[in-house]
Amino acid sequence: MRTYDKFYINGQWVEPIGKGTSEIINPANGEISATVPYGNADDADAAVRAARNAFDSWSQTSAAERADFLRKIAAEGEKRNADLTQTIIDELGMPVQNAAEFQVDPLAIICESFANKAKDMEEVKEVGNSIVIKEPIGVCSMINPWNYPVWQMIGKVAPAIAAGCTMVVKAASQTPSHLFIFAEICDAVGLPPGVFNMVHGSGREIGAALSSHPDVDMVTFTGSTAAGIQVSNMAAPDVKRVCLELGGKSPFIITEEADLEAAVAFGIPDVMVNTGQTCNALTRMIVHESRYEEAVELAKAKAESLVVGDPTDPAVFVGPMSSAGQKQSVLDYIEKAISDGARLVTGGTDMPAGLTTGNYVLPTVFADVTNDMVIAQEEVFGPVLVMIKYSTIDQAIEIANDTPYGLASAVWAGDKDKATAIARRIRAGQCAINGGDANHEAPFGGYKESGNGREFGVEGLHEYCELKALQY
Ligand code: NAP
Image 1 (cartoon, protein in one colour):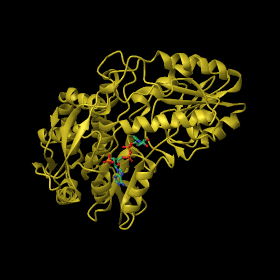
Image 2: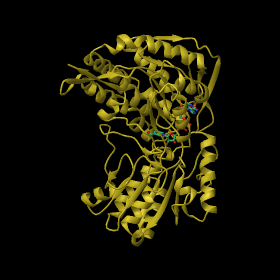
Image 3: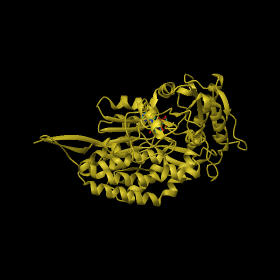
Image 4: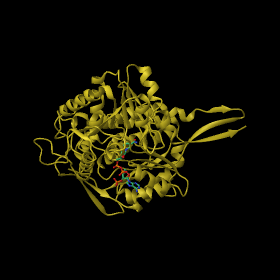
């Protein structure tokens, strides 16, 4: 069991002001996997003051110096890869098969990516009698979710370091330990005091304090749309920049002439990985009516082939839901879908065979879903796919765009050009064409209620910049 009792503020491990503690429950077996301090708004205030005091000198460092720190963090992070991976298995329940690859390996990759981009901060643009320069925006509050804890954290911290910002980071209550380890990494590489600060506590108190603090210049938030709206409201009175990465209900259009077997083999693991707790999961499969039943059979077979169970077992692809509350929420959605008339193809509300404890939900596929059903409109955040039928491409695109969300999407068509033409009409920040891979160098973010910011790529760096025009 991991035990932490201090926060990392101003380059030191300090006694929390708030005296709470939080026990982290392993979702696979109900055991306590970590105990961490659970602070209050005064801890957030101390961390923001440290970040504010550090900003002036850190913002004047050269891009090369900051890139060097990012490379040192990458190297130190690789040494801690096994520790970080274990926190993901113990606190989130993600299977060992995927935990390092999907959650922890990106730490070094993303640090290297932004180390390479830091020099962009020193590039100037000439416009007539002006030059336009970039400056770091200032002190950043970073509030993260529990579903991809390391990936989300480094997707904010690395560009902020590259830009010359200082920061205070809060992890979700469910998955805190990686952030304590990351503070040890920052300490080991000698990052100047106050550049990176971490506190831990509830979103309601610490998250709110970090969103509204007058010394914070920018709040970057990843989580639910409901909490993102609250963060925006709290940040509004002093006009902070707010970068939101929120929920999704992403469509996957499969056309009549697509390679159906390949498309379904791509779509099912995409939904089920991390037990469906993925913001950009392709949870609505939209299939041409002439291939629909064939697709349903392929989806059933693929979903039933995934091994469900103990996340420490290397054969397992689908682990438990992250918490009992999350499991109950998913079961409620499954029951609602059945009562609304969706056809349960596989999965449902039973425990997987051979399991009696743990927050498990079977990989579940629904057919005969119409896009007005709750199961097609709301983010379930569990291993649940809905399959919707269409007859014309215009109708498929209309269905794809008919939710409040716009985070990700996918199209599988007869060829790349046909798929791209459809992708251009989908209102979402990303589209995977005929099985295209995720890319850490490309911007990631949402349209509509999926958010207003971009992470990764040079666009992810620019979120942390102000522009200044110098006139001559
Ligand atoms: P959440 O409940 O909104 O929590 C996210 C973070 O916000 C947590 O650290 C939480 O703290 C904090 N928080 C909650 N209420 C807050 C408030 N009123 N003010 C300030 N902070 C607050 O979301 P989640 O359940 O952790 O994550 C799942 C959601 O994140 C899904 O909707 C998913 O789609 C979305 N997500 C989006 C992306 C993306 O890039 N677009 C990536 C990953 C996840 P506590 O944990 O202490 O409550």
